[in-house]
Amino acid sequence: SFHWALTQFTGANSSVNPVSQPEYWFAVVVSSVSFVLTAYFVSTITTSMTRLQLLNTQSSRQFNILNRYLGGHDISVELKQRIQRNAEFAIDELRRNVPESSVELLQLLSRPVRIELDYEVHSPTLCRHPFFAFYRRKNPAGI
Image (spheres, rainbow, N blue to C red):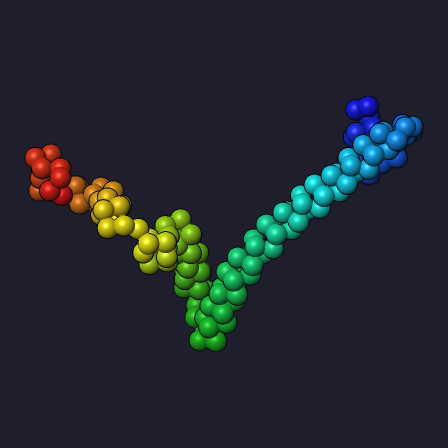
């Protein structure tokens, strides 16, 4: 039976065939479910690949425009390479550190939750300074 079930999901032929009416209907249901699951799996992979390709296309387009600009202004090879490395670094930073202005859902947060979020985001930077570190120890609610 495992061999038969495996052949239903892979589309291969099997020497095991349904004999009775319940076996026939079970085979039809399993075949239908396997078809739907396979279609879902393929469509999920296709969608993910398309999204990845769109992201790469936008980045490639930006670098292409940058290269045309640099080439059109006779920029030296060394400076072109530095500019491209710097641009790659900047794009990587943007991907890692999403700017607050691009997160629309933050605008929907309640005021107390927003204050807590701002505190957690900015307190590590503020508390590096001795005054704020001292103030945080003495009056945590005040900061």
